[in-house]
Image 1 (tube, rainbow over the protein chains, first blue to last red):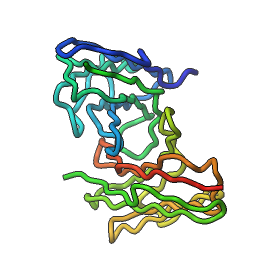
Image 2 (cartoon, rainbow over the protein chains, first blue to last red):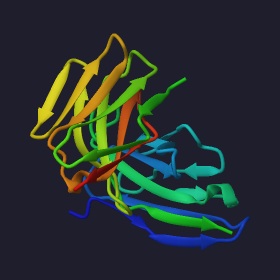
Image 3 (tube, rainbow over the protein chains, first blue to last red):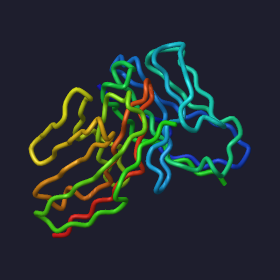
Image 4 (cartoon, each protein chain N blue to C red):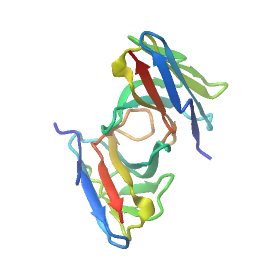
Length: 114
Length: 110
């Protein structure tokens, strides 16, 4: 049981490039989410999904797309990378949505945009 | 809007002393309040949580209190140890969203 797996762990992009951050969980969790973490600003919710085929926006969704075709996978796409998207990205999951269960986090992806 | 405020941003205590971190939230409908600990370069990990039908919860040296009327909740760490040094995040749920505070960096001096 690997939990929540994020790939890659590190990535450097040039402004304007596109990229997909991968997130997979093997716990059969219905709820998955993406956060970005910047110094002094905590974890900010980008997008979340309450189940396969259902996604919704969080606090800071602009510049990011998501899809949820399977229960296991929840990729995050940067369509045209900007330096402001330099951050550490965390994916998380919990058994169900409704916000009454703790989330399990992956190890994060450290992304730098030049 | 949905908001969680956390204070202080930095906290320094002597080993053995207690540490208290306070959070307030904006939506009275919030019903779940987890606390996460994050060590340098690591993932956030749940240390304790509390639901809105409970006023206090304790797990060994850590405890959380919730005041629904005032919309604030607090983390208490007693008998602090150097390994408690980390960043601590409070969070509150707003429907399907979990919103985090900005974090408290705790230093425990030996």
